[in-house]
Image (cartoon, rainbow, N blue to C red; front, side, top):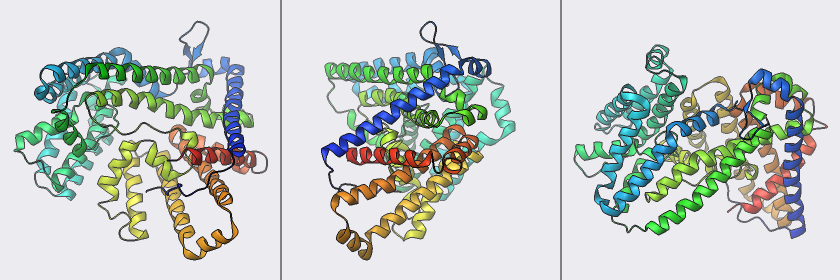
Length: 498
């Protein structure tokens, strides 16, 4: 699942790179403008069919059709912003005055915060999952731990059990919050269980249970991540207890980071105020009638909104984790500069990527036992992600596309590394032409990557219609210029690659 290095690719003339940047930005802005025009022209129909909400400013309308953004925005207003602020104040206070008790205090706060939102019954569900997994982990059998964890996650798909849990809450939002909490807690359970099998903490079981609860109920990362492994969490929390604490440095960091998060939030809100992409993608009639540039704008807007959304959803928890002297995963990289499936998985959700590598890919052999084992380990990693997200048919197609994309990229990398092909390329192509060739291949990979993301974000109907309009009906009119612009995107991505 690792992506190939691009460090050996040559630099291109500045004028050529400038042209790529101009064409990349220009195509983004022009396609967004065409999507904005389409949204304005069909505003009445979209408002009737999808109930556009009043905007933040008078006279504006807002597209609420992205469930995840609307869900977390509403919960933030209700309680999450307040509880996260309380966590930050409590962490700073305990770090100053009682640093040795900071972790226990934050554990108690996390339990109270979870119980306050999920209710006593919801909290007991999580504690039941954790308790059973803790008991099984004491046997130190990875296969049993996996079986217990998968059984725990399977409870999210048992209708009779879900019906009972739904009856505990007055609103759908409260019920969904419990489901999200159980799903994310499932990743932490697997992390703890496998780490305990491989190398248990040198402590009595009560202390082990304490660290499991502290890890599972750490409030900033509790509901939605990003994911930190149990090993990293315990090591960093223990180390931070003996580190000095600078209030001025923390406040300066929080102010600057909060400013960036607010800017990302404003960007996301601006997008759903000016381009009703989520309402449009939910209606096949609108998808069929979109002009070509607006169709491209819709694809870019959907994936860019997804990126900006997770800058916000991961940005605030990561900021608070950093204040607690943890090292959270890096925030997502811009999807327009992603030019490979492997790069997308490595750099968008780095925490989930590390989790998959450590607990699925490497234990199954990874690349140590040849291509067949590598393909199997990669496929099972994608299969688990599909199951964890719900296992719906569109997720299965999305996982298969990503698996195939990674395998093709890996095979091409191996092919170009063979002595015959490598010597032929060295003899016939200059360094600059090798980079252009790499960007050309990456442009095709990017097209399939965007299509897979559209499957994930919009479902099979969106992916099917984009495929039909771009590659079937528009193979001679839409696909060529689209691939040309994706070539420019890939060149910009290669320019910014580490």
